[in-house]
Length: 605
Ligand code: ATP
Figure 1: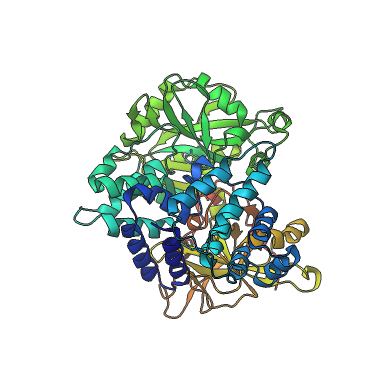
Figure 2: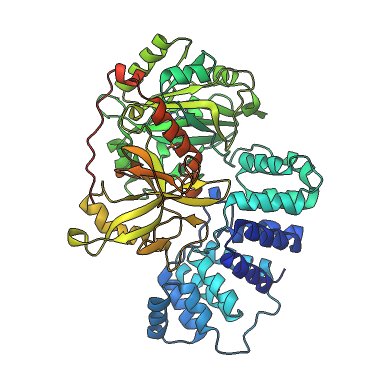
C-alpha cells in the first residue's frame, strides 16, 4: 500500500463523527492492505512502531521535529514558529508549508518504506544520534505531499490524533477477516489479551484466518493483559456473589506488576499499562529468579513500598516516587524499598497455567515461591462466613492495605486476561466513605481559572468511558483538591491533549473553554451521584434527558498515569455505584469494623 493512500484514509477517519463510520473506513483500509504489511499498518495507526510493551520510542523532541520542518521545506525558523503558534499543531504546520511547490509527491513511497524510515530514526542512538534523527525525518518529509507531511509529523511528535482505540480496531479486524467464523470478535480479542500485540494478531489473522490465532500463545517477554475486578458494596454482598465461600486476599495499595522470568537470565517487569518497569525496580529483577524455582514463569503481584525501619507497608504515594524514575536508582532503592506480593501464576514451565482454576493456580504459586525480603506471597485466607471475612478485612486495614480482594473458588475460575468480572471482587475501605469507590475520570475539557487561579485552569471537565459506544461521557466538573503546585503544572500537563474543537467520541452537555483529547486520567472522589441534564454518563439510564453527575467532586491528588483513557471508570460502573447508593441505607461491615468517618469535602464554586 502506498503511504499516500494510508494518509487519505487517516484524513477520513480523523473527521468521521460516528463510530460506525470510523469502523467502516478501518475495515476498508485493512482489506486493502497486503497481509505482510498489516502489522506495520496496525502499529503506525496506533501511533506506535512496535507493540506498546516494547517501549520503542522515536526519541525525537518537538524542537527537533520543528528543525526538520525548517530544513525539509526551506522555510525560515521564525515563519515555522509563527505557524505553530497559529495552528497549535506541528502537523498542520508541515501540511501548510508543503502546500506550495506542486512537484512534491511521494509517488512510490510505500507504508513499509515510511515504517522503515521511522524505525531507523528510533534505532539511532549515541553520539550524533540527534542529527541522524533529524536527517531521517527530513528525508521522509522531502518526499512527502502535504497530507503525508501532516501525519509524518504528528507521528513523529507522538500525537496522531486519529481517535482510534483498541476496541474499534478489534471490531474492524473481526469484520475484515472474521467472516464465517463463530465468535470471531471473541477469538481476536482473546488473542490480543494473551499477547498484547495487535500487529501480531492482525498479521496472523490476515494470513491464516481466525483458526490460525490458536498459534498465538502466552509467551515470556510478551505481557498478558491484566484481569480486573468488580466491586461490592459490602462484605455481605461480596460473600453472596461468591456463593458464600471465597479466597480473600489483602488488597495492597501499590503498583501491579507482571513479572516474566525466562529460563535463564533476569526477569522483565510490566506495569498494568504494559510499560516495561524493569529499569525502575532492578532489585526485583535480580531477586525474582532466586524466589521462583521453576522457569520460564509468568507471575503477577502488587509491588508496595515498605518502611525501611519497620518493614510496614507504606501508602501508594511512596511507591509512586519510584515510578518513571530514570536517575538516582540506587538511592531510591534504599530510600523507598519495595516488596512484591505475588497473587497469580500465568505460566509455569511451558504450561499455560492461566487456564487452571484459581485455587490450583494459588496452590502451584505457593509451591513455586520461596519467600525473600523482597518477594512474598499475597496474604490469603479462605473464608465462608461474615465474621471471618470481617476479621480478615480488619487485619488487612491494620496491616496498611486498602481493603480486600476476593477471588472466586468456583469451577471455571481461570485467569480472564483483559476482562473485568465478578470472578474477582474488590472491597475497599473507602467504600464506607461517601459514594464508595473513587472514580477514574478522563479529562475532556478545561475551564480557565479566575482570581487566584488566573493563568491556569479553574476546573476540569471529567468523563467516564462507555466501551459499547467507544465514547467518553462527562459526569463532573472538578475544581477541588488541587494544591498550588498541581495547579501550576496543570497547563503543561494538559498541553499535549489540547485541541480546538470538540474531539470525536466525547459526549457532554457543557462547553469547556478548552477541549482536551481523552488521555489524562484523574482519580476523583465525591459525595454522591445525582442526575443532571448537563452530563452524558449513563444518559437516560435512570431518567430520560439526564446523565449521572458527581456532587462535590474532588481530585484525590492521584494522576492515574498507569491507566489509559479507555481503562478509566466506565459508565456501567457509575450505574452500579448509583444503584449501590440507593441500597446503602444501613451501616456497612466496614463501618462496623471501625473505618474512619467520611472525610469532609471542600467544594468550591
Ligand atoms: P482496576 O484495576 O479494577 O481498574 P484500579 O486500578 O483503580 O482498578 P483498584 O480498583 O484499586 O485499582 O483494584 C484493582 C487493583 O488492585 C489491581 O489491578 C491490582 O493492582 C491491585 N491489587 C492489590 N492487591 C491485589 C490482590 N491481592 N489481587 C489482585 N489485585 C490486587
